[in-house]
Length: 266
Image 1 (cartoon, rainbow, N blue to C red):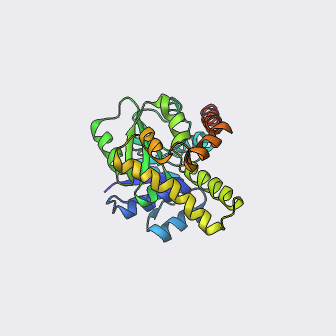
Image 2 (tube, rainbow, N blue to C red; image 1 turned 90 degrees about the vertical axis):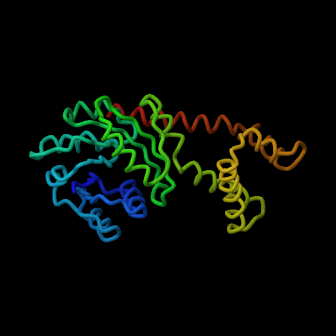
Image 3 (tube, helix red, strand yellow; image 1 turned 30 degrees about the vertical axis):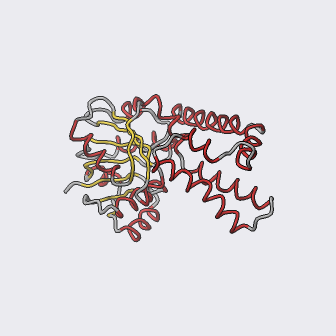
């Protein structure tokens, strides 16, 4: 049985492999990284196979997943092109934020067929969210294979490539962690001890969003329900809005999208 091969053994590979193992993914998983310590750590933790070199990794792949930082993609694909592999897979998946399909195809062309995927690190527990974009020429069987891989670790969205930068900036679990830390620290300054502040802030963020997902109600309706006019919640949100909350969030997204576009130019 041909393998699913990861080029790169960093954080997103670790998260995906953890989710795939949790879901009892049946295909062999092989990892290659130029830093052998990273590969060995994954082998010990998740019992993946480790390719001894790049050529071996490429030759045994049915699906090849490029899982390195955006700035490293061009160099890695150049090494792949020069490694002298006698066989290359047809299906290539890039997890590199901001690197467009056109740039990927320019370095590794036909018969390679490219897919961009943006999986969330929360895929490690099977609750991830992955955006997919398929290049022209990707066949039905390959669509099924890619969707089947990422469906094992959470929800899927198929979106146009022009939306990828905005999606990548918006969907990150870092927003939740950042909001949790910020809200908890503000609660501590208001008088709560740290443990209580974190518990209260986590409930405010996670329980409310979980109820929105399960209830099927609109965000506007739930905001209206939670924030009674003249009440504490309404006063809190009003204070945030007057302080520029919406502007701060919009500026953060603009900065993230700008970084994704800088990645594309590297």
